[in-house]
Image 1: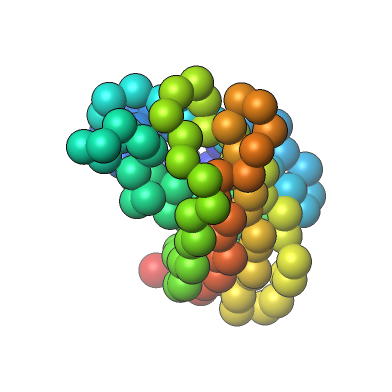
Image 2 (image 1 turned 90 degrees about the vertical axis):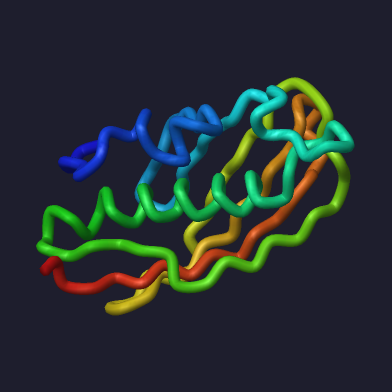
Length: 133
């Protein structure tokens, strides 16, 4: 990350689930989470909340990279996640693509796939852009 965080990422939910932020460009970003018991629900598949957390963290970070240097903060405003197929093992791979870059909101689509490239979940994420306190 190109900006200073308030809390060390390994001490946050991102650290708990093992979020690994990968490559990024101006209008896209990638991340992954290894599938382990700590991200599964009792039936053994990746918990739906993990997909929602991946999408929110990834798009918040991607937006913050652009707006924090200009004196703004980025925070989740809306998260709509749909689950398409279960993922039991391997790695969840996420790719966020920015659809809209507004003055006060950015909109992202996030596709989360398994190791075989099958789409497991999709998220429409809206990030609020506000002046830093």
